[in-house]
Image 1: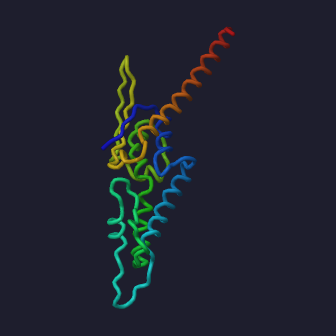
Image 2: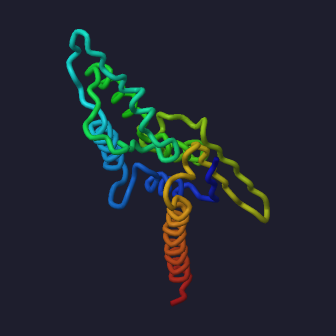
Image 3: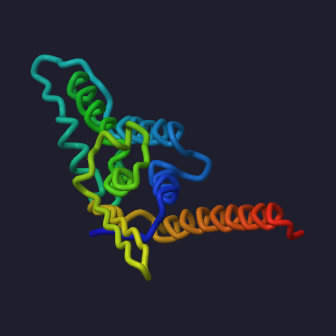
Length: 194
């Protein structure tokens, strides 16, 4: 699955800024912290660290997470769980570290475009590489188009993501329009027009 867009370099930053874990009012490092907080909260809802006792088998946290995780959305659904599963504390810490490293994977679907356009993205996004993204540039006399594709497999499961992308493009379009008007006005003034 992929999600594509035509863009300019600043659009890439805007689209990354609205890609989850970003949400209304949460961008950049605040979005990263929110994503990490969501992971920690979801784990706490379904499992609790317990000391290993002789003769008692503790559940595997990775198996619990896999079983309760919705593959479509990536969110953990406790499915009417009355109390969290007791799990080995060190195994829970290892799972938490692994999951926290994944924060930014969805936004990394724009890494190829950012690289192609020379846009520096936050390290927590860039660290995931550009394997699940692509960028193509068409530059002819009549057409200049940059097409970016986010091919992270669950990108199309993000609620209203197409609308988010269009919103980012619209924001940048309005900024470009204001800049063009400013430059035209300045050029007219320099040439003596009022």
